[in-house]
Length: 218
Picture 1: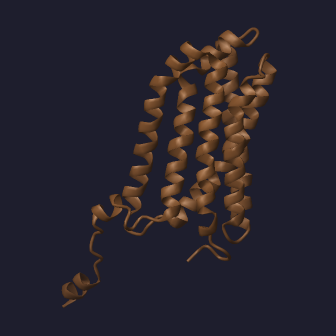
Picture 2: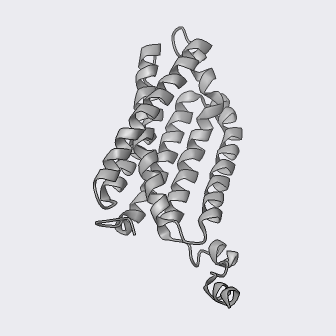
Picture 3: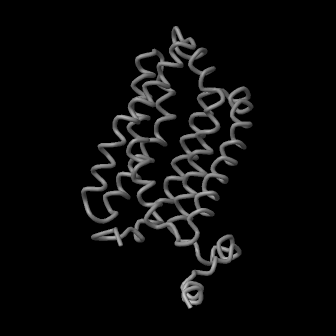
């Protein structure tokens, strides 16, 4: 008898065809995934040649400055993620989450243009500081919204699809980054990255009306 009752309450696995056919997946999950595919793919254009850019375009640029610049970005992001996470958790509803995420992505998209103005190590460190602030704003709010809107019984496949598509997009553009920088120069590449990232950021606006009001915890 116990086994019969147990079998009756078991939830049948969802049909994976419904997921990949977009019949069940939420609009928010789709848009958040698409945004990161576009934005992080744009970033992938810069990643392979970032160290070369610093050593060739910045006065006194060397591998030590590259390491410091990366450190400034990571430390800034690490320090400010927690305060932004506390802010979005403190206020009920997702409107504040959305706008913090959106502004973070906008700042993130503008960062490549700031590289065009960088001539000294200190200027580079300041840009990396802003880059870290942008990531600290965008990441906690993005994860919070994604977590709340993830479709029940599709948690694994939605996270797997997100990570797979973003990684493939970044891998594809990584191949292009060096070629484009060599053919058109760093300035053109940074402008392209900014345009691509900003275009991807605009897709976030399609999710604005889907943001929950009041208590977001069911």
